[in-house]
Image (cartoon, rainbow, N blue to C red):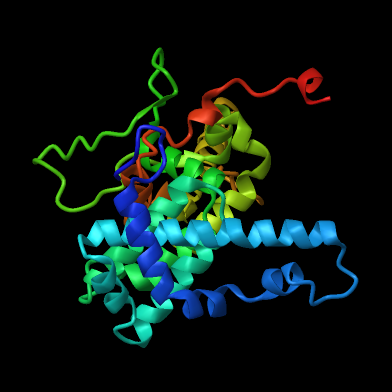
Length: 312
């Protein structure tokens, strides 16, 4: 991404943004709705002047983010602004893609998301084949909903793995070590299986919102909850065998060899803590945020959690 020394988009990006935005003005207005515009214009009589100003600023901020998002997309394709606008208006599908990206950019204040949406829009316009993972169908709806904490959790699940080795840190960066027979072919989940308690210990700031965050990621297919039935069956069978051996030992000690053993089977199944793992789609979505320049997505979460005295 081209940035000026002050950290703002470069002049070329701004120029491309403005030109692309002009061609999409009607489209963006339709997708975003006109509620803020109506309020800002004073069309609702009971809205105070202060709220009208706030609404006008909100609408201006949102449209600025849409403009920047389009500029990042234009830069990603290498098109001039007119060529990019032509890509957007090529057919109904491309127009809808751009409108959905615009709506997502309008409704966030997180700049890495604005940049990531622009890059995703560009690739969705260029990749008409659908690719391995159809960007337009699966990635954009997910990225439209994800905010910083969602992406921070996704970053944990994708880039780290629990380590249960005694004497070593409980979490380590994920590295695909392949198989005993050679490198892993294609994408592999490896040992990235996280329980909720492991996530909460690693990133305490996510603990209170973890069920909702996991639900969001799982709904979009970015993570999956693993099947625990094999572990439950294994533990149940072990419990049955242990009980049988205990009864058999008691019979031998009591001189009752050869007597049928009457054993009560366990009435409840063992409790196994659920685990979650990232998917290839989740890894692909996270890549857009990495490319947005946010190399340390969850840096804020590494700070010690605030104490109660600091919250008052």
